[in-house]
Structures are given as structure tokens and as C-alpha cells.
Length: 76
Image (spheres, rainbow, N blue to C red):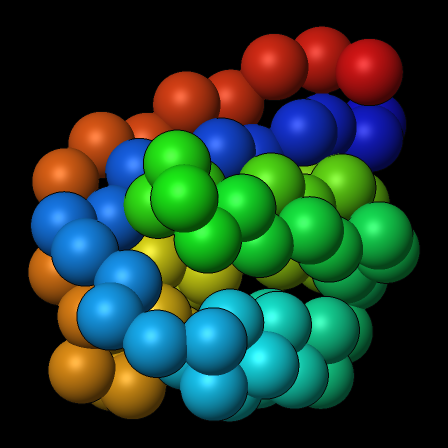
């Protein structure tokens, strides 16, 4: 089943952060569209939850050095 994952981040400090996060999340298997909202500090991604999970995306972003404050998952 497809889901929308929304990660609320502590802070994005520069536009290059946006590109870094977007590229890493898009590279994960099972991830479709990814949008990083710089001013809101959010990452939105459509995923196939048979292949990946919100926790996996949170781990990817955390490994890049960003703190994930909140994770939401919605059915598409």
C-alpha cells in the first residue's frame, strides 16, 4: 500500500541541505515523489510500504546529520 511520509526536521540551515536530503531519500528503494519544504523544515515522500518505511527514511535523514522531531504517515 502506498503511504505519504512527513518528517518534521529540527532545522534546515541552507538550500544545499534541501538537495542533500532530497537526493538521499529519493535513492531509497520504494520511494516515489519527494519534496523538501525548506521554510517549513519538512520532508514529504510517497513510499511503497511493502519496500520501505517511515522509520527507514527517518534513519536516512538522521545519518545525514539532521534531527527528525516528528514522523507522520498517511494512506494515499
